[in-house]
Image (cartoon, rainbow, N blue to C red; front, side, top):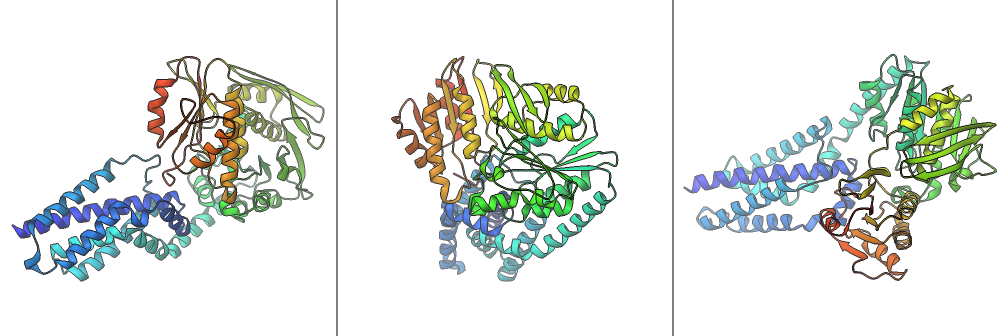
Length: 526
């Protein structure tokens, strides 16, 4: 009987350990496989002392204290088994916004971690079931440390693999010298601009763009190796960055001849440390262009407008007319069906109609139109393509729900300028209540509280109802809202989760109302 209980105990403990390791890897993946970021997440979310880890530590201590065979009690083991099953069920039932993607790298980490623990456990246990159970429980309590160690141990392997893939992508690109390569970067707006440019150029060329958020060196590498075809004439490369040098690394691979900088603003200040470093990094794209290259810059942002460029031909644009801008928008008119406006510059006037709304989308379209004109796309094709551009999901995407409520989905991410524009769009809706649901903005370094408080102030100025989700930015946003005379109640609602917000929304939203979803924080933030 005791042998059977020990076997069941060991199986359940190992199963629980596998689930814990899987979750650790999920959070490591969401932190870009960077131990320093993962460690920071552990600290911010009190993962070192989470209830499940504390329970495992207590189990371990009790098991050690009763390790002699005669001290083992059946009731204790059954209690441990029930506790482990319960914690396993909680992990299995947990809902995440971003599940673990089982890439080859994850499989390597997962396998190496489990093998390391198995070797240690078997050396210690000598195949005794009760000792295996103890080892699995101990590993579960400190699995985060093993995850970081395994990640560090495999770093040279990952770097060697990535380098070989990177060099192979460079080889493929070198065999297509006539293909035009357009780089797009910016603190925000780059993904939307990428999609808009791809849609316009596709009227005239065979175009490939980096999909989704493939905006890292390895994302671009994978796009080239898996998706690029010999007949592609234009390759649009989205370039993301969180540290100085990130854009240069992508440029070293792609060697773009043309580039767009959509914005330089207070995004990722937690890693960049200063707006000057953001500017320096974004302009690595322009600095990498060849002498006959072509740069398109958004002068609506101070740290774009004040950066001189003399190594390539530059065209600057602005939504509102600016003396320093070569192109700007005129006759902007919003309606329920979209926006009409005219791109004006260098003696040209192109009248455009789009389903998109918001000043940010006009800005993104102007940048794309300038590149299209440079590449010789006829005006009528530009007009047709712009009129057919679909809204990019989760980026100021407007939908009409079945109950007559208008949804503005701006949940992909949020930043000081983008959130202001999104709130302005919401504020222009006058048919019903204007409701915002948001957890605020992240990765703003020591400016995080300041920008979220300003965000709260603007919420009070443009909305009728605000639902503040989660704890991460709650105090700052609420402080900003209350500074405008609001009090917690029917207008200012505080909830812990988006599910709770959704449940309340069904009770307070009615036909004619407009709901803005501004940002949706990943699982690594509460």
